[in-house]
Length: 349
View 1 (cartoon, rainbow, N blue to C red):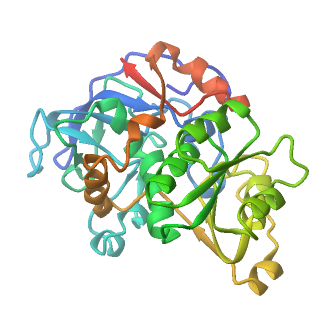
View 2 (view 1 turned 120 degrees about the horizontal axis):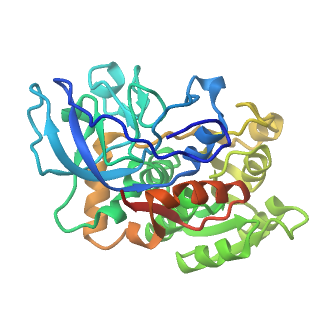
């Protein structure tokens, strides 16, 4: 539980959730530890109305088992294995009804508000469960599916949908945390040529293992964007800011060739406060597109599961350390210096 911003999370005993009529209660089997949890711990995102308050139970990358079912729920039963996207939708707005539930008019972010306590807990409730719960295939491990609540599915939507990735595209990924490494793996699996950019050599090594054809150590490069351009024969076709600081955003745009696509996945820190200056004249003259990308529409899970079943995508390759709930505060603090590799997952509650 979030006690105070920047102070270690505390383990508290709270009441076991009871489902409202539209809800289910999910017992957590695994939950990823995401940089968004770090942002919540730092008190970020008040500028977009998403600042978690002290007392909040964090955790938004869950996979688990339905343990209790509200009286109005029709498609779920106790024992169902599910994942839950972090952007809990209402199922009825115009965006939900047209397959874009990730930008629901009344989206509630799991683990960031008191009406949606998160999954760093033995159990948590899910609003509009018939709409928001995604049943998992029987043969997948819960820990491997945790990233499907946020980082892995976010990277897939960013590349496949927002950037309209094509085989052969040159893709620069700026920031090789969990979502960045997911993007590296997905881009490679879909036939593109990913170029990984990060300041840590151990993360670049992991990126190479996941399919990066080239890497740029931004801590050693005079101009990381220029180095990407040289590796990409004049500029990347697609570039992703997977971190969310001003430097990586501008480097991502600077990495692109003409008519390139920048995809903004990382949300900003308190230093930027949601605002980053951009080279708009150069973007205009080169017809560079800027795409925001937030989570993934629920209708896209079916395709994601097909690619996983076929072995094209392997979320298990992105998993980092597995830890207990008691180890969570230390892991979260390591993100101060980008000290985690891949997606750490809490598997012991």
